[in-house]
Length: 187
Image (tube, rainbow, N blue to C red; front, side):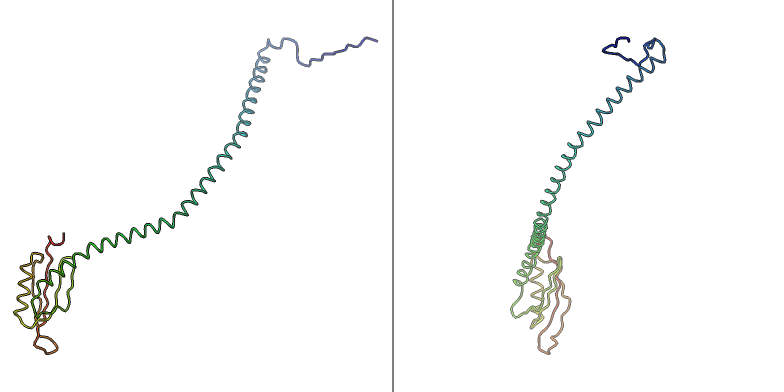
């Protein structure tokens, strides 16, 4: 019986002129190229898998920040609404007080020019003109009132609209006068 070898070597690859033929070179090149492609693909897959954890962590951080900022905005929403409401009220108040000084000035100027024994029943003050209604014992007092208004620098275009006897049968005259407010007195 022949003696057995201790380390038998079996090689199934072709040992002949493998590298000499062009077909064998192409196969060798393809195998080495595909091996590189597989390695690169595995690196890309492992990198994508590893980066997923990092991206998930970033996404969670951004979600938490978004929730915190949303809570802050919602909490300050009521304050902002109240603040804007107060600003609007203050703006309206300042507009009203700015306009309120003009009627009080006009009333002061009218009251200074009223002669004795005359009574005003209504005064309607507009932006540019004023309507005055009143009662007088004589036409002379009405004419004096109109003259006083004409001489006042705060009034222009003073006109008597109506003069009639009192409806109650007394010896009084009712009158209506329209007056335009001078442009300099508005400022």
